[in-house]
Length: 469
Image (cartoon, rainbow, N blue to C red; front, side, top):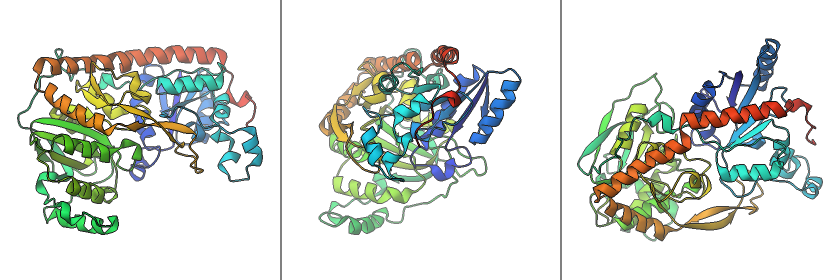
């Protein structure tokens, strides 16, 4: 079988796209590759023309050909002869749709005038759909009413880290340990935090004051773009410096431009929970190309929260696989405070390595989190809009974080870190849970059954009814 794969963002454009909407689909594609390579010859494509060319070429040679498009449904190409499968992540409890009345009233250029924004119509043109969560898969199945094969599948994350977690789970390590990092580090212990400097001031003025908090210690290393949190390009090897931590270490890998991550709440709850605990550290690994996007907000927030004895470290830069693993091993708990997740690969990576988590068990995270491996943060539904809908109308829901619950779970997890047996059990369960959920063998088996079903019952997409234009 020939498996064509493509994403709106590829290796050549990811540098400029870091932190922008849909940039994570490139990494979702890369994480799915090991499973797809078990099932056939994988060829990366960059355009619809390439899909059509490869399809004709290999079909004439008698090969079965399918195209996996790692894109949101409204960006998935539909006019292809090749059977097309949309692989997408979604974290809301409804799918974008357009009624006939809305479409009739819409004028050219309006959101409602574009049929691709009605996902049920998009799915009817596809040969198969793979959402990355069970909640999203249930929405697609209701939308398609059984006409299109659907399966919920995560990326096979666990197998990349299968050998990391000891069989008995990790013991608690509170002594000094370190990980190597080449980039920019904001360390609360190297700042002269003064809440009076930003209190009762307009944000624009407080942002200018934030530069004074750095007090000349700032050392900037300009780095080329690369995978957020992971791979660094080969063209340049900046100097690596050790970052030392001790005590109980909480880590989160996030895009600070994504408001759904609630990183300010994560930070403030941490500082309130541990304002008298010098051996508690929060590491924020920021995945954005521009430090100025969040530096002022971070520094002003830290100043307002001071004084506190706990430690906050923000990392801006890139880690190769070995350095990323060092960060995981230096961590005690992973933290997620988001209002919704389509999958959350960093959380899955830390769990696979045997690091328990603090996170809400909603959206995609409900598929793999439980109390055996995580401290479950409370949340409740709140109305919101679909992220690509310019009308801003609240037609769906996200999950409102319970800040007090997160703060209390910081304290609870800190106490559990003093119980070696309990922590090792959670560590062991974390790795085992992700093995059951996202091992390569499990994902390959599900994919194999899905493709067999799809190819036996679906006609090429080009034979389906045309979408209204």
